[in-house]
Image 1 (cartoon, rainbow, N blue to C red):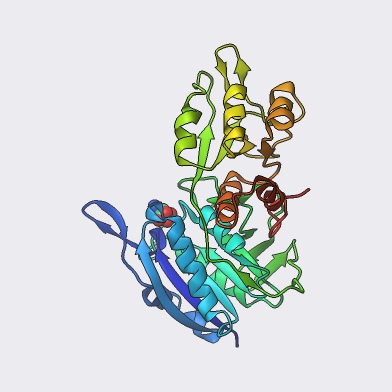
Image 2 (image 1 turned 45 degrees about the vertical axis):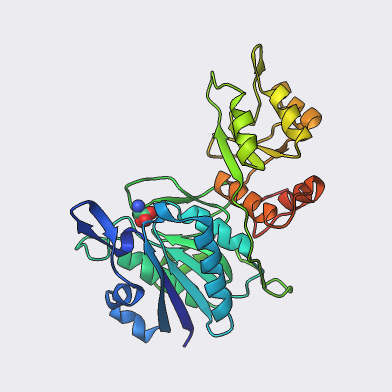
Length: 331
Ligand code: ASP
């Protein structure tokens, strides 16, 4: 029988009504008490890491989670993390960068309805996660939700209320899960490299969403506080340079200041191809901007935090950004 470690962090799955709305209450042991049938499938040890709404989760919490997995890595066959859905995609990306080449499954799950509710997706998601974590050959970071296993670097919350809250962006769903029945569409090959844990992130990353009329001078302020700037632009990627709202002049200043600029797109599917149009090609070719291609915005932002945790050298940053990690980028 496999031995899993369940780390609880809060979120809706653990929440109870209060006079101010739902708030996390249950610890990991209480969550498990709702699925007693699991005793026949595997051994589970529980630890409460924190008990918060994932809206309150910070990069420092990702480091604590990764460290908790590191401390216990050799003791367990796999790890489950119960988590709020709102920032689960960011945490999944963070664990994918902080824990590279894991030979074991690290599964994040949660629910849209608390486990205490009579009608809830919490029990299914927990049971599915446990089945997936116990499946032979599964390794790496995944979000398991509503019967789908999604790679940690590809997950995005796409529905705020329904059970089918997560999608895999620009990558196939890794597996469909219905308790014991698991259909794997993507095999994660065991890396010959040893697992490697990182313990540094630098959150000085800003995400700027363009809208028509946005003033480029906003970048002055951003550059005073942040070292990498992701610009969520339009379509396949472009930076406006029309008349007095010319972002290219600002990109020039940013590049002189050694700031890293990455162009991504507001369009959810298919990613950027920013050299297609003049509006994108000029930013890339003349102002050293990078682009996120098929990466999710969540993964791009967190990858930059991981990169800033290691270097401020622009060419090293560029190399690391374009190095595919846990299938975050198809080049
Ligand atoms: N606000 C909650 C959270 O992210 C939502 C959820 O878990 O579904 O913690």
